[in-house]
Each structure stands twice: as C-alpha cells, then as structure tokens.
Image (cartoon, rainbow, N blue to C red):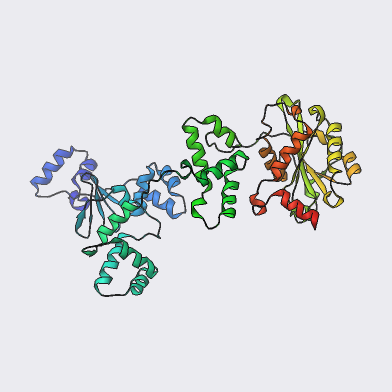
Length: 447
C-alpha cells in the first residue's frame, strides 16, 4: 500500500490523482491515519547553502524570495507555530497573550520586543542570570561565578546588587528589570540651554564642522563629560531643527547647504587638454607623495556663475595651509592665472617653493613660464582624477561655504580673500591631530 511508504494521505492522493477527501475516506475505512509531514520552506535548503557559502543574510534572502525577518528566524533557529515563536534557548513567546515561557515559568514581559531583542554579547543573557542564581544557591563566590560565566566578578556583583529584591535574586525578574532600563528616552543634549549648546553654536558660527567642534570640546574639556558630545549628535540636532522649520538656519550651518542627508555622487568628469608638454603625476618624486617634505602645493580654480569669474586656490600638502589668489576681474585665462600664481608664490620663502600639482585645465597652459619665474616644477594629474590632488579638492569644498556656486566671484577683493584664508587656516583639522594649518606653518617658519 502506497500509504505505508509515504505516510501522508494528501501526498498519496496527489500521486494517485484522486480527491483528497476520498483518499481520507479510504484511509479511515482501512483503519489508517495520516502522518503530518514537517513543513519546510522550499527555499530553505538553498538559503542555507548560500549562507554556508558566505553570502550575507539580506542577499541570500533576496535570492530565495523570503523576507529578511524570516531569514533571521532561520539563522537563529526560531520555530513558528500559529502565534507562538520558540527560540533555540527554549524560550516561547506568544504574540496573542504577550507572555514568555521559559523553564516552565510563564511571565508577562515588560515589552515583548525588549525581551526578544538580540543584544551585544557584553550584556547578560537570561541563561546567564539563571546560572548566577543556581551558583549562588550552591554558595559559590563572585569570582567563581564570574569564571563560570567568563565575565569579571564585578559584573556579577553589579548584577546581583542592582537586580536583587526582598526575595533575593530572581533571574526572570532581573531580566525584565534590565529590559525595562535599556530604553532611556532623554532630551537631546543640544536642545538644552547651557555651555555645551553655546559652544556648538559658536563653532557653527565660525563655520567649523561638527567633527571639528567635537574634538575641540575634547581638547578643551577632557575631564568634563557634560561638555562632551558626539559628531552624530550635532548632525542629528541640525537635521532635527531642519525638520522643525529652521531650514534656512541649518543651511547656513552645514557646509553643503543640505537639510537632508544624501548619498555621495561622482563629480562631473572634465577632460580638457592643452598642447604644451606636461610632466605627469606618476613622475612626481616619492618625497612629495608621502608629504614628508613641506613646500609642495596643490592648486585649482573655483569657478563662478556662468564660468565668467574664478579664484585660484593653493594648498600646501604637508600643513594644509591655504592661499587664495585674486584674479582681477575674475579673468582666468592662462596668462591671468600665471601672473596671479607667480605673484602669490613669490611671497613665500625659498624652502616652501617645492612643486605645484594641478589638473589638466587650460588655465595652466603657461606652466613652463610659471616654473621659470618661480623655480617650481608643475606636475599634472591624470584626466578625470581629482583624488590625485585630494587636499585641494577638499579645501575647495570648504571654500564653497564662503563662495557659493552660481555667484560672481569677481566681487571679492584681495582683502576678502585674505580674510577667508585666515579663517580657514585657523580651523583645527583632523588630519593634523586637531591642530590648525596656521600653527603647522608657523612651526615650519620658526624652525
């Protein structure tokens, strides 16, 4: 009889091509019952194969066509039956009643999500709390319990002291109490009036980035936790204000002018050329590449509205010191750029005139004349490779805070450019150990 081999009436009915109810009637008359087959998702085997091969959960779930939450249940060994989920540690969670059963004891959780949440290994689990209770009942010392758990004795002591009640230490009550303490709704630090808020506001007014502000706080108040804040907290406060309607103020505080986070995109590609022979960046000496020797500069133009005006920018690779070159009338043809660069470079001492790295813009068509006047060789980047002069690209991004795109740059005088350069050189930089470019250049000039 086929039912002896298969065991399941529904499967046999399908194989024979008969109605399922008819097959069940035949089985009853024969005194046979149907065996329930284990339910297994048809993509489960393929999912496990992909996970074994090293695929990420999200990728494997997408390939077999299941939700990522289902894939997480498979990874954690969770079994579902109706509204009940049974976890690998024996914990059963009923979503209808909101109860949790563990070791034969049923409790009402503080919050279902809080008890189910997969925590970082540094947090004690319910199984570890049960072990603490059992070992304490045997009279074991804190150090012995800690060794059994693989945790410091201080962790065990703090757990017992914090979560013991009048009836002693109870693991389930301790686990619920710990879950209740985890959420800590707090008022945002920077929404409260005080020294910290004023410091951050002053930093933003001076056009410092959130990261520069946070590290300045760390340097000035190393032992005062009330004067510490993370970079993310500053950004969150700014974006929170933007959602609250302070869009214009937030745009002024954030260099990009954005009030929403956006993914980075590749910059526009430019491949202008000029005829004069160039020395490429691949031929630049290693001493320039590793920034070990000061006096080597990167340069570029920032362009104004309609391409009718420009400012030349120079950044020293070692100190990140910035110099802005005024181009009269905003003219940025090869002759105007050559004359402006020569006049600016000649203000430097000889030991800071090492080399200049530029892109292949036509404004450097007179690079040989520039080299003859200053004694500085010019190296050119590969086409569409702005990262090869990354310090200058980064600085140009900072300068757009002062000279927005789409504006007429010829309106800015030499004094205006000098003021902006001084302010930029007075900002602490992460790459300089949070010192300023002006401090680093001063050290070079005084040694």
